[in-house]
Image: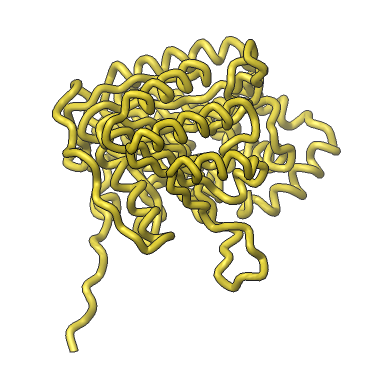
Length: 394
């Protein structure tokens, strides 16, 4: 009896760059050339661009989100999807059951009645033996006609809406991709749809022709051999770093491999700076995050806490050459539990734009030194120790 065929071993398990080499070509052949990238850090600008893409779609609209808000932002996008479905354009929505637990049922009814096909990812059903309460869909994707895609850290809710429109104006990072890589985003959307509904549907349109000069890799963590793919891409990029690493992350509770890669880079003389929120929407996670500061600070990693509204970005820039933007937090939820998606780019203009925004954000941040961390109160120490013991679930 022949042995079953095993899945292809991911390339990151086969090859690694030399430390400090500045070589980001370890998976070069997996990057798709010919893309145009646009960075968004404000929800108002992003939502306007997404709305325009939906309105202009002629073949398909596919939207996947963790939070579909019960607010003006959620209502706006529900109406946009319903209007598009009424025109006969195939329109599909995937939302996470836990992340969107406050979603107004009337919005779902509005969309279904208009013809929007909806998938609720892992519905809340404690009585069901198939309920996977800890496996959540944390991705944020919009693909129109298989040619224009969006992905990053922003949910469809008032937290990301501009303050002048009643939102909270959380800073974040999201990217619009025009070109062949958008078709890969669409494939990953269809893959989730098939696995949950056991129904496949064909893609709409062909992969877009070249629209720019950016080389892009769409990276998703799923299944067993692909569970670590984003984490290992980060490890490789940190290993290759020659001059500087800039990380902005909302829930920074890195596992031992990321911590080791950061401290080894700092030991080589690389400037390693990490920007995290000074105020978090989840206090328990914030305390668990701070529990990790000491060993990193002691080994040369610099940590800054943003003093404005909740920082929700998940972005990395290395040597102003390699960059990553997506839904992936440097925590155990993203590593072990959630469906996540990142866009990795070998694109100097995007990397330089991200680096510039990072530098401006540091002006509104407070650096936490090793002395600061050692002088923290006993209350803070106890909270860090307590919540840090549960970091696997954060």
